[in-house]
Image 1 (cartoon, rainbow, N blue to C red):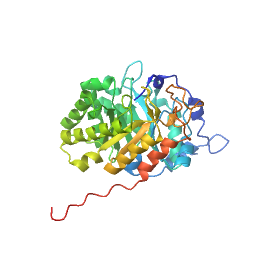
Image 2 (cartoon, rainbow, N blue to C red):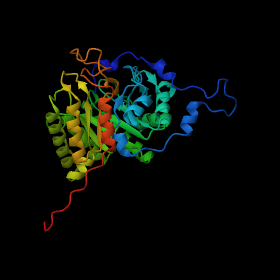
Image 3 (cartoon, one colour):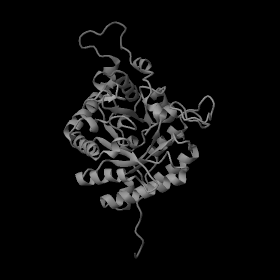
Image 4 (cartoon, rainbow, N blue to C red):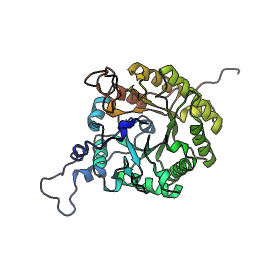
Length: 357
């Protein structure tokens, strides 16, 4: 998922670090609790799974990240997907934010998470993404890969995790098996953990490498909460996106032997708001069309890349793709309001048998 600007210099960290302050002006004495610790002690219970399926992606370390508590207040969107956890850029099997900031030493993302939870929301963390080195490529075994991701779950007390598996890792079957088997281990060791898998799209649903991912999951007997594809960059309009999602639905049925409703219930759409990397434009009405399709079919996930971009550029359309604005005319958080609608919409009623049929 994402263009070259994703790999930009980390910015905005100092602003995020200032989100959490001490409860008292004087240094805390023995047994005293900081506001961060208080937020953790009083954090709300897990949200309904549909909220985790609606979490838009946001990069908390760069890309002019918005105040997520304010976005929650303004849109009703209760969950956010923080991206991305990767292997260190210098190599190794330690989880880092964007390959640079070790999770074990992080305060910025932790403070962001505390702020969301204090406002009544929650987060998922996405591992992987486009162009980076994933832990499944460097940790060697599923067990080592799972242990690295468990550090992230423990550090941030996660109830949800997303495996964003795309180029270049998607072309490495051994690394993909490490990721999926690690996800299965995490699922087993963390009861109730919401696990999503996000992968590549094509006009036929997914690419041969994406189908290989599904086949590897089938061989492991691994069933996450859902599989989502990313029909942007090469998809000119909402109709082509919906056609890809419908084809992917067929791939889920064929691969896993699921019936129609079960396949839809394990399917998701991960979109891109505004101008894509390839120069397509996905405006509010386009994403509304995909939302209507997803709701009508009973999808369990509808999300987009990215919340950092969910605001109008100074020049509404400069003919460039930005990491901090959408390049389409809009009000702040127009696209995030669509994910909130997905989370709060009533699921479709089950089909009724035809009398006498």
